[in-house]
Length: 141
Image (cartoon, rainbow, N blue to C red; front, side, top):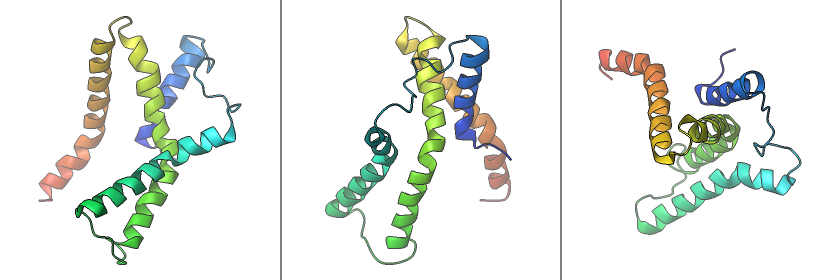
């Protein structure tokens, strides 16, 4: 079974914290002791934000809601369900890149650290996505 690419930064951060630095997960705020309503609101926040953005786009006339399977209710429902399902997976990126690597890369120089973390994140995506993009271009797509 192949892990989704978005979850690998969290796995790397976990492995380093567990076996390299010995920190474990202490101090990460990942404890399950937080209230269930806090966890639920964090998980469903992308759903609410997307619904608000769609409502604003419709109000501005940029998007028209219809009952078609792709552009209408079916496509919107697919988007919203996909977000709820993938939120835990994409958490891996936030935990790995943002909460682990960024503060440690260049201590005391947050702007440089942010620039290098973003560059590393982009490089990983470019290396992972290059074969797919190259094949599409070669096929004329």
